[in-house]
Image (cartoon, rainbow over all chains, first blue to last red; front, side, top):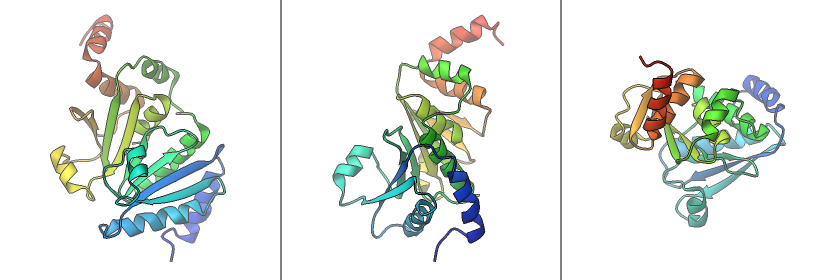
Length: 141
Length: 79
């Protein structure tokens, strides 16, 4: 059974038609995961099935050490949203509820390769000289 | 959260993690997350709540480049 309702699937499929370039979801899970691990994977599998432009790769956090290192993932479930380029976008945990729409937003932005930010923001970010790590804590509701 | 991801797309220097707080209680506790959204910046500063793009970006940049930002505020006439 899928985690995405049919009525939602139609709407999501429509939103994903905005995609310009292919996007890859790289998911890290582990057996003996917490209760959310299996659900997260199922959700991503369902989602990837809704667009030809969207693909899913799944790795094991304990076994696929090269990939874990490559993506700098330090906890699971983890999901990377990337196109040909890895922008440093990660989701940790099950992207359900409100966060699911955040995931869709990330997929569309990455697919377009455009942040969609205001010109002024782009200018300020271009002047950045130091690495920035943003950790945004959210809850599903 | 959308903004953090958009910042990451715009700048190669920025990484943006979306962390489900209830699934990572230890981390949420370490960063004293009592309300969401809460954005932790380089393990040091933080921003609580959802802010409009301009304000959120300024708060984020202020955390890493305080000197440059206070100068900009000075030019704007201060508080």
